[in-house]
View 1 (cartoon, rainbow, N blue to C red):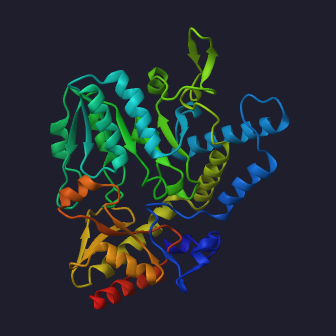
View 2: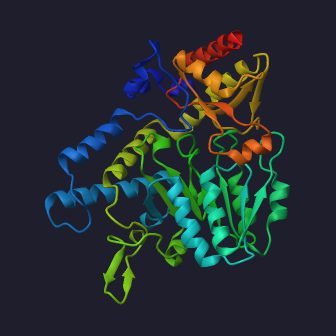
View 3: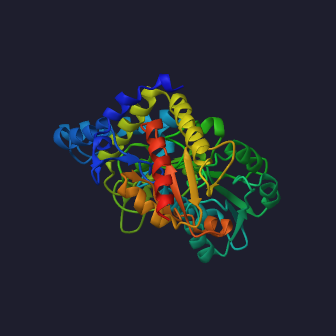
Length: 407
């Protein structure tokens, strides 16, 4: 599939990839934390500020009208990118974390009572754990945890056994940010829906790596962040089926999300605006849409195929290294490899790789419960994007082997 993507041309769209670090070419393999930004995204930000910067929705003047159209066009771009039914189902947030907190408050306070249960999994990011713990502490609910198999996959038999009449929501990652496992979210949704249980999917690690169709999945809620998909920081998306968003109360109060305000009572705006209090990030929305259009120009299927080639190449070469242990060996993986080598501390190896110009992530990756389940303190993590190359994988392998010799 590599021939379908002109990687050299793609890399030219990302100026930062041509810089050096410690007098060595930068090899950026920390894409699961945040991706680099193509020129078109930065130019979209510049264009808004230089040509149409004005507060949106309420202004009658020219700049406000232009900015409003751009913001709502961006919402439509998001709708089409994830195949939502309506723009009313697209709520702009600050990112995945805020989107989950919104639901933990709006959904949790509305539908959850003492003794009710919410199901999450062992592999979840802290953003899909802590908000539910906070809800537990407020409302007295219980958290049920899906265990993992030895391959780093969700134990689906155990998941089915956790479902009960007390289950109010299932909330799981589409793709693990540590293990790379692509979870069977469609099957999870089908099994939950058979019991009339709604499902939230954390898509932060999925939307930049594979096609996502929320209608085909039948997800009730789907959340993700712009900065992990080549867009700007500080903006993300909550997709929710309109039937759910209609009945959920607002999360924040203030301007923009109201229809009418008196000192006695406030009525709220229609969807999706009742969830978007205050001045929206109309710059971020336009830049996020630019990132989505950029990805769409290559075809998400082609991106997924190329990144899978990178993953297989890196996995095969890393497994030949003596003392290598890879965490997460599901046959259905996204382009993430978490690993340890012998007894070398991940921070030490990560620091030395950095001196070779190779950027990888070290630590618990905001998944401390998963680390506890694996009985380790942390790992190194190499995560690939479609601008990475097989030559960079070779450099990573050479770098790991060089560090091993130092120990």
